[in-house]
Length: 235
Length: 235
DNA sequence: ACCTGAACACCGTTCAAGT
DNA sequence: ACCTGAACACCGTTCAAGT
Image (cartoon, rainbow over all chains, first blue to last red):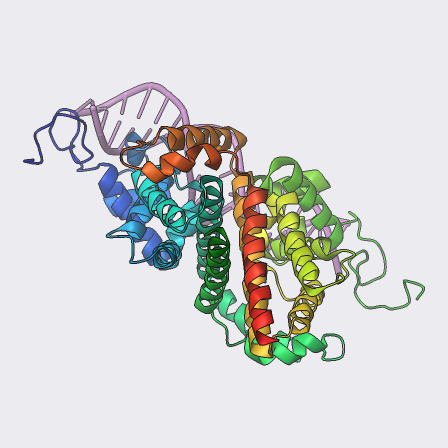
């Protein structure tokens, strides 16, 4: 409990128990990587940039991670931990599921640079187990048998992760072309030929007003409505 | 109607009406790009590889596309057209929505290399308008007012695209590490401490049996169940 | 045990020069 | 009008050499 009673390898010290000459270790590198992605976007995360920011040769980080991919997996773990920080099951199962889905998406939207790099490689670590346990517990509480609980867990988790990754990918397009796309999108749908696309013309004014959060909340609400409906049929 | 009555620029000929010396044009380049991605994955799509396959200098393609990004946008258009090829509205609105969502996802899964490159930059062209018109028409047929039709259209389209892009991203991980991940995933969930994660332990045997298609169909079924429920409340 | 520095095999893009 | 070839400013990774 003193915090330094073991000689097991710790990221902040090398195996001799002496800080390395440069102070380099996995956590320091991940912090620097995170800062780079947050400030300048995922395309700025290069080993050379990392070396510059850390004041070391760009190959020095390869003494702490076997390759760049291992750094990305490290960032993935940080993202999961951040998403689940302080999570507690809510008063009822639907609120628990809603909260979890929102946390996953929110973490991706808050750190789009990291999310787009790692959404498909969230490796199975403790943080993820904790989240999965809470979701499955809520679904079993809702009265589903184990096979359905497994299916709905994966449907919810994948939807939240896919939505988060998708939004993150948009956020990472360079701002100029993103803004151009959005404007064009607005205009083109509003100007689409009413003769060729009568239904589109009717709803076009509303399409422009819908933001990503409303889309996510709509999808989540639909899914949970149906889950609730099916749980009542069971019970 | 003869197929060559205009002097407007066509991809297969240069402005003098004479084939270019190398036979290079946008369609030839896009076909080659598609072949590269299908055969060797998205990371193999480089200008140099494109030059080699086309038998020209690697900078020659920049005479037909302003940069690599424009090539990707060209591929995006091909993907949309492929997804909607021969689409016709079905007998009832729910069948139409189901078919459209499946087509979007299937196109991503069938061409994961392209999908992962372009899922976020499906630029607003004719193919997309046709698909959107069919979806909105189905939702209005279901009795929704325009604002709700717009919301549900975006919820469905984004879910299918996000799911397709997400699955495509997995398909593009190199096969070795993907297989390793899947195995680990199976094992780790089955071995997760039943004391710490009792609910997870109960459903673990089922988790391994669920494939991506079942997850997608489950999600789609849930969403459409809820849409149907809400349409009945309206009507 | 850890870091450096050079080298290697790649990228996308620009631009003067050819035809 | 289109293509070539050299050049530029980048990548990630390897490896012998230092300390």
